Structures are given as C-alpha cells and as structure tokens.
Length: 274
Image 1 (cartoon, rainbow, N blue to C red):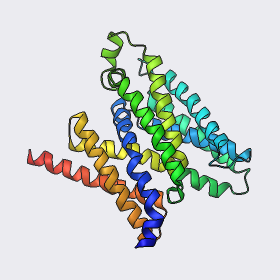
Image 2: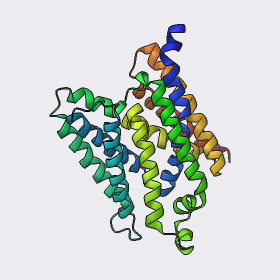
Image 3: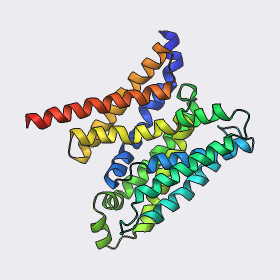
Image 4: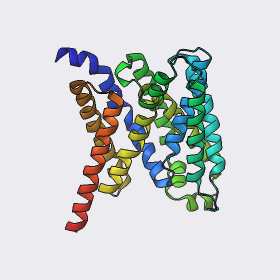
C-alpha cells in the first residue's frame, strides 16, 4: 500500500488539480459545437514536440515546450479565422482536416527518429505516471493564471460561447476575443499534452462536460458535476492502472468513457421518469 502511495501521489495530485480548468473550457467547446478543436490543438502542440525531437531537444525541456506553444498559437490563429457567419463549410470540418494533417505530419517527422514509435505512443497517451512535482506545480500555477484571465473577461468569453449574436450586437470584436480564447485554451492544452498526452487532454475536456450536459442544466451545476466526474474517473483510472498494470492515461480515458455511459443511462432514466 505504501509503495502504491509513493508511486501514485503526484499522478493523483495532477489528475485532481489540473482537470478543473479543462472541464470549464470543455463546457465552452461543447457549447460552441467545435468538439474536435481541443483534439486538433493538442495534436498541433504534439507536432511542435515532434519537431523538437528531431532537433534533439528533450521532450521535457523548455525549448520543446516553446516549440509546442509556438505551434499552438499558430493553430489558435487559424481556428480564429475559420469561424465565419456562413455555414457553407462547417468550422468542424476544417478543424478535422487540420487534425488529420498535423497527425500525419507528426507521423512523418517521427518516422525519421530511431524511437519514433515510442514517441508517437507518448504523444497520444502521455506519461502521467512519470509526472514530477515540478511539472504539476508549474502547470497548476499556469492554470491559476489562465483561470484568473477567464474570470476577468468572463462576460466576453461567455457571450462568445453561449450568445454569439448578442456579443456581436454589443460590438465585441469577435476575431480578437476568439483569438484570445483560443490562445489561452491552446496554452492550457500545450501544458497538459506534455503530462497526459493528446487522448487524455481530449477526454478531460469533453467527457465531463458532455456528462454534465446530460445530467444538469445550469452552468454552475455543469461545472460542479463535471469536476466530480473528472475527479472520480481519475481516481478510479489510476487505481485500476496500478492494480492491473495498465497504461495510466489509457486507463483514465476508458474510465471516463464508462462515466459517460452511466451519465447517458441516468439521463435516459430521468427522461422516462419525467
């Protein structure tokens, strides 16, 4: 038991502290109906890390992080430009294309690396079990700063996501505020990709938010329910990965999938009861 606590202490702290902001951002993403933007931004960040690997930077180095963040900010600019009033080409389609192309580029780049397959696996499912106290505390400090920015500009961000027509009527610069939203969002994603990988980032952002939308209506209630689901799924996933000797990130993702099935079943039961 003591050995398990020693191994799991910082991964558990990471999975309890870090998903809070991801759940909040996930509610924005679900409301905007651009579900795969986080997956695409995570893949763009991973592409930056792939370039760093080819340049022989350590994956946890500042240079590798700067490359990932730089690629992510470029992606934020592209996603800002793809949001248009016309629905001739859905934004989600363009986001999907960007994801596929960046994923393919990552595979091509890593094919030049002797450890390409291992690095590709790491970008997908991360190395939560190997997270260090420094990584967790630095990332948490960044999340607090970004959460403060979202609190200060909460009116603008909430209008953009939940009432875009009202935001435009009030004279908000949609492109400028959209870029700020995506830039902050991309910074969060870049930081978590280095810890949890692309799949875990997507799961923490979307699954708790979707579960909350199935179960409750108000934004506050959705936040609370999403945080509870993310916390319980993290604990269950970490425990099962240790007991069954499974990849930690993948175990948490699958646990979140089970949570979604339960939320859907509860929602269906509530609908029938009503």
